Length: 432
Ligand SMILES: [Zn+2]
Image (cartoon, rainbow, N blue to C red; front, side, top):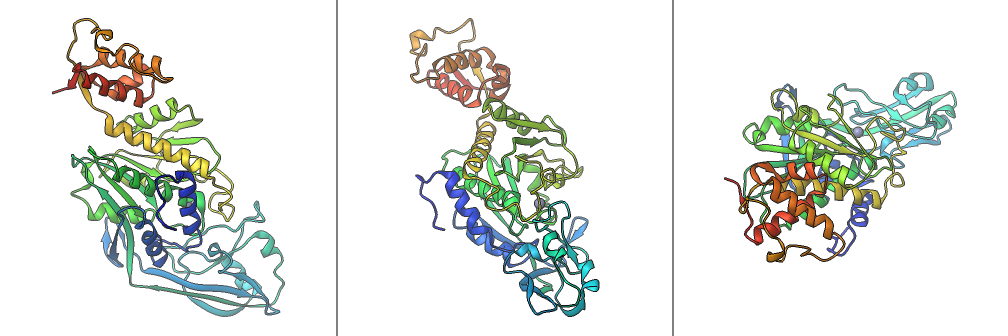
């Protein structure tokens, strides 16, 4: 895929990226992650980092590196009944190499299917226990005749590295916003190619903004071990994270879900709640719980970094999750674009959330004399007019623009635009 031009609608461009990434067999280590990051690096300044196998990281150890060339099961009549080339979900991720002939009875414990979803291939992993296995649909499993099977997994599990990517976009302040997405899932779209696509297009968008306030860090790391490895190797930088989001499941048809930080009242929690409410998109706000993706690591007691999580369908709560049904037809360009827009507006709140003082605080300044009364054209006249009054009214040095937007129950962009207009007319100045 070529780098899309600015005129390409982001939804289509993000979907095209997902189509390109979909066939790659990713895992928590290996060439699938490297190939994925190389594609992302064409779109945003993603730098690739590697941590050798065996490196202690917090309470964990970087595992051996896993790679796979192919895998199959041939039936008693020589017919190929399972082929990795048809779906990389067919092999349990991190399967050790195997080449054996064995009976169906001996093979059965190595076969995984979903009795409730007979057409779907499950996604299974065995990162920390050396074993091997195949995943197939229940329908395929039911059709296997008795007899001897030839089984081959052409994989390697050897000392190598854990690979992750990060794009750091410096701002005026060393204070950071982190956007983290896991890059360890094979051919699954919603979880988490949508998160990856939204994140890398956010990085493209943010990189083009002049006068950035925060430093933005986009992390593309394998789930759990990747975030743990990053935190272990960034003990100095981690406390600079002021706001964070993990992104997953952003292309399905469920309403948005925002999972709060552990504290539940961080600026990121308020920014996400405001954007979702004022965008009038169906959504739910849920409290933190210690299961999910890398928000768990960032929020752990030793770090307690305010990282929330944005998704549509909740991981584990919809039947397509972690199965072959989470394919290209399960996600749509429109929904991915809407998710991008929600994320962009959340970042705009974090970037634009400043505190001001009204420079004409005695009574209400005469807006008409300054050309500010019904000063703006377009359809948002009343909205902006009211926003000007809210900003003047609350800008006493103790209310942020986010405080004001929450109180006014209005979109942050209106409040931010009102503040900029008042600054331009000498009625508002930064507090302190
Ligand atoms: Zn997952």
